[in-house]
Length: 251
Ligand code: MN3
Image 1 (cartoon, rainbow, N blue to C red):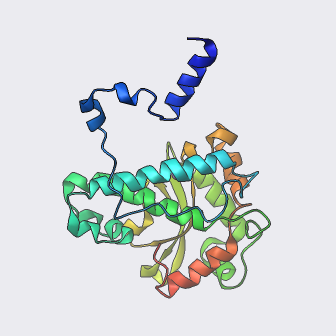
Image 2: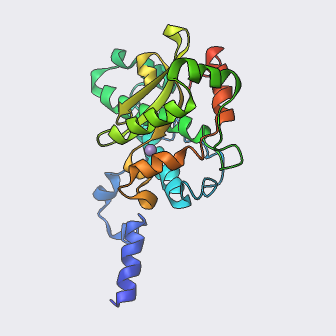
Image 3: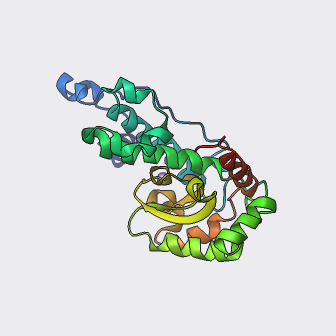
């Protein structure tokens, strides 16, 4: 094999292409059945993968949405495949009622329904810089941020600090708490844990898993956290805030 052929073969294998698929024993192939196609499905990315450049690069967006989010969806469907009753529930209800689920699947649902919910929210609250992304909140949302979180500058500082302090993988959220008159709360979570499990609704949040930033920012998570505000879509967040308070937006 020439070096060129070897490189090509390695690249194909890395891309998951079944270059040797036909030579695998039938049993080995049967060990990896296609995941169930439902009930949960991957929502499309609401903009092009390069829309958030230069703050989030296109390759990161494609891998993050097409591979990572898809994997949470697939693994949630696998976890529920023998539970037709749970397949009828919304992802929000699965997370709200996590401690009532069968123990055998509870961790898988916590991780994968959490991953599905967190990323579904994440794509919706970002927009291209200067085209919805960046700037500052206004109106009712700005007033609530001032009252509950000390204002937008204070929020950004506290949010970025919370993001740098997440050990390993996790998220930072601003959540709405219906139990406390829709108060806004800054909450960080490990892994794919959801604020829905605490009876709150995510208003917006940032993903600080390395898969969200490592290709561009490497070890500099703080730089990613700072740059990310340039793609936060405050108008979309304001619409979510009204919707959450009216009980119309649940995720
Ligand atoms: Mn992620």
